[in-house]
Image (cartoon, rainbow, N blue to C red; front, side, top):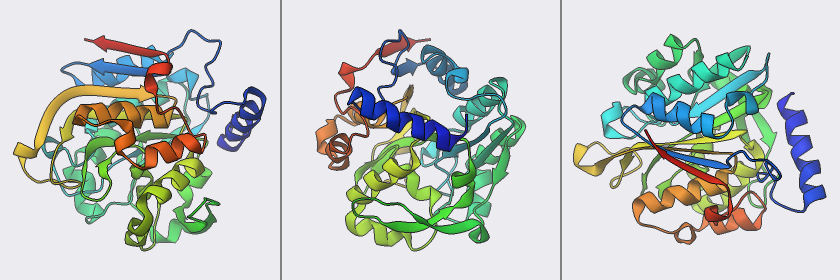
Length: 295
């Protein structure tokens, strides 16, 4: 199933069920959110996807998949500024095991990508698992109709537009403007252009982008979380070893659950109630099927 067909199906299902499109497992025994704790980032990632029903629930044979981590900063994994490379590696492996034809890992880094991709560890980990790693190429940008409430159009990397499925893989961390940067903030890395202009109304921009990209799966890296001085950090004293991964089909619920790791409530982040009102997901994650494990 192509991504455009997948999204069309979601829209039709939403009209029929009169509910969020991300609650598409109604009538199923599969989990909507999996919350796994353990010492091995790859192992807890694989267990989380297993609890959701396995990667074949999301990826079909022959599909072209983009995995979108946060590779924004020239930092090592220990500083929790970029997604854990072992989480990315595990997802690439599972996509190929599910039959993906091609898996691409990419992001539009804030620091120089030539430094961020290798120093984060993501470039080596993704390539070792067989992924194609793409540095941001300005020639691959296309002005695209976002059709949001506030954000009407923007330059988007065509790799995201051409993919059959997208998996969003943010890292949970503090942010100086939005309090936290989680799944919805991660979409700024799929854009080109003067992204600092989006900070003028960042909450609205995040919701508009979440409505546009619609990942098939959100996997929150909370193995290490950045408690202060985000989004780029730089001090080990700002990092907490949380040893968790949260994965789910509902991006609002995944972000909402992750706020609790920072002693916050979903309502403390302005964009989450907005996303709920737009029908993008469930802010009260307890209402969904939540599977929690420690391995």
